[in-house]
Length: 110
Length: 111
Image (cartoon, rainbow over all chains, first blue to last red; front, side):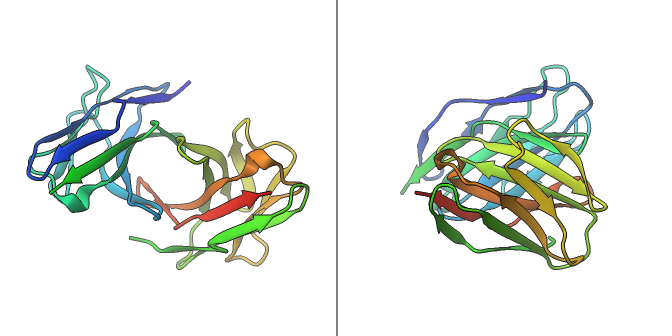
């Protein structure tokens, strides 16, 4: 079956540090890939997406590149802010069904 | 980004009671989805619904669960006889061009 594996957290960084959250996947079909973010007490918000190999999704300074050869979709940001503190979920979409990773808690300190 | 509202935001119920969770998209959509997130765990797919029929459901979506679109706009998830392990956040989602957009969720607490 389809699955998503994210690096284990929690991740704690100082403001302006570089962020990487690893995500790898296995899929039966040709998935679209997503990162969703969940701020404290809120729902899931789409952060970025990529629909085919070598596509780069980007939003709010975050980036992720769809790497088919390594089945990966790592999330990166060059300089994190306190307001980026949240839970980040990697997800794949095949056949209309989203499969999520376990989530990575990010805490950014001033 | 399409908007989705969910009601109630928080539902507390006694074990064995029936609950109905509601989802209202702001605009017309054909595909609807329900997911749940048990506290501290990953988000899990429950069911997808297209053109007034279930198109796919997970193993979690057993006979205690049902979905319907009673009036062409609301989309509901019913849990017939709640169990303690049904306590979770329940998210409704609608389809975009590729992605799915989520509502704010309903927190269900079963006592």
